[in-house]
Length: 101
Length: 101
Length: 101
Length: 101
Image (tube, rainbow over all chains, first blue to last red; front, side):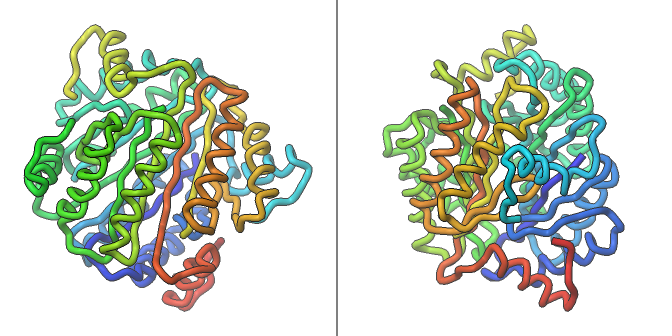
């Protein structure tokens, strides 16, 4: 399955990049396949691995903030893998054209 | 913490209420405090209890569908409980008025 | 169609109820059918009416905050109305049981 | 502001890439700056331009489907632009390291 997630601390300054960097450090060192974009981070793996990693990131954010909003969107399709790249390629193939990515 | 979640099977008929009913049966029997609304279900409890329940619902939906989209939004605020009712009441208090709920 | 939305200011105090109350005042006075719950507000109506209302709420929140996160989930099903209540009732009917709502 | 959106038809086959390709064709021809990833598409521009484009994509999807779920997440920060690339770069700068993107 693949999952997109984002974690936002409430009651902090406008710029969140320092806190987000701490979370991405955890993701980058986890060994789980990921892709960072400007609205979240996409992970690929099984439920337990992915949710354990997001839990760790969420708890880390709570150390520096009294309130945290975490959003997770899961797309789980049987018998499919390599979907972080594959889903985008599949759309491009249907369209016969490269897209901005 | 409180969490809103919804689980949608892809590649099924337009009406999802039969599958949603099976998921709600699991939620209703879990003993975890919840509230069903027309766009999802809200749970209150700690991370492990809530995510274990959502995992169970997600896996149940996958038994009848090859592809499932699950969305989870978590609002985790230290030292606060009773928030399924409390957050709405707090807004009404600020407004000095009862709202539709 | 029905739509769930929530608007969160970043860089503010932990308690958001005062700002949320201002947004709900706009919703309550709009004449659009709505339902407030602890993780957002559900609206029912057509695209233009609903998005115009959410735009107004979003812009109002930006008056008091330099950064605002707004999340909108739309469920649009042809030929259906009264769905804020109807979707929940349909699940209860399938289950043959009243649920917490 | 930047906005992430995804549009999913309910009651269709498991593979959504053909319908998604039609939507991306609209996005690609719009002239609005975008970035496709495996869980959605990110747009940058002002509220009216972005929501008009998402409306067009949503209505297009409804032509071939009786039920459509559309999710929109907006991050609106005063005085900032170039954020599709800029937000990611800012996290990398804080971390002193390039990330997978």
